[in-house]
Image (cartoon, rainbow, N blue to C red; front, side, top):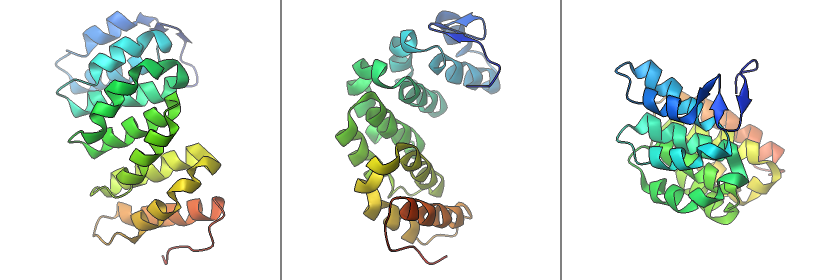
Length: 183
């Protein structure tokens, strides 16, 4: 959430969930994406809207819906089935956020299992997102040590992969693993 943004349950920056949802149909992509992110800032009352957004044809709207549910955390527990459905989303970034959201709402084993799977994503950006989310999880991410190592071991020409390796080394050190990945 932006530092000066006003938020109360069901309202963000003076707009209701319904008003933000209307903006999801705006012809301007920036307006749609801003609305998608804002719905997740409306708190627990936004859970039904976010679940509906997980069904959007637009991957970025699905991404922000999963992100919003993860931010809401345990109070979004009713979204577990919908999040599980998008673990196989065509967008690897949606999969990553859905996995983290499952973990955040209390489906810790299922969420961690999905994050470990996502650490093998084709996209270096998705692998980096996994590393960042595992850092948020902290010591409970020890179950993912092998996946962190594997994500760093991927050889590709994506410049983001260099950062994945550095991030993996940091995570391995923070989680008390002895091995690091050669940079």
